[in-house]
Length: 401
Image (cartoon, rainbow, N blue to C red; front, side, top):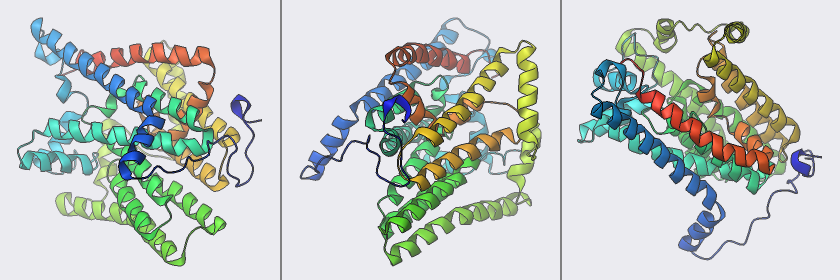
């Protein structure tokens, strides 16, 4: 039996637990209404969670201003967390020091600034819009693996997750989620135009943040599934291969640009030295070992990092063994998740793993399946918003300005 009493998956059969697609309503407007109605909880979770983030974030900033606190001990919400790093690239261009930041978000910020939109506002608008699209896309993609109710719960949990404020500040999480989900959804349409669009979005994901290239694993799995089922024409295969080639092409283009600007095509790797992060094969072992040592040494922060890491890994195991649907796509998403976990761990530092786990959809699909237990669902809906509010306050207060 699959988790929650659902029928276990077979090799490549359509899962029995997935809701049968309803007849498409006539007209684009009617289809849009049907789409929104079917996934209304996801839209509500987005609105509620973002209102919480904005009100708490700007409320904390207002409190600091009213109390006239030392400006070096807090940061305005619009400029919190990674804003200075991306703004530096957008303003000065790439250097050997700031090359750790990938170019898509700084380019958006610089483009907004060029037409009179403040950089923080350009990042804010794009990040939140892409987060909404990504959240809905995650729910849609998850339906084939865990069913619609669990997929919707998973997307809801993702919106409310304690570290989900990253989707609304100047950071790449919102962009990444939207691009990955959009790329896979397009590829599933199995037309030449859709595959080329999937490749374009995948290439943008690749230059958004390092794990963006891993979407290629899922796209390959989708292509294998379409070839096995015979649902893809020969010219579409050519388009799919072209789409896959766009991913390494984006990496090469970024490296060439870095070489022209800094003289070092691998500056994005070498810049990690400033953060004491060095990618090695034994990095995951070193990261977990140091995290365990610090946790038993009394570090609450490291304990949270460990729980997030092992929790995400456990959800991936559950996904691989209990989800239903195409075996190729199950393996693709599982490998995507494993790679997304191992890459930050390979730096040898157990740092911000809850944040990285936000971008692994299978983790939240299986979390949504577990949420079938009413007590767990209620606990998440109560505890997650509280923790999210605390994290937003921490992003504003108690930092070096």
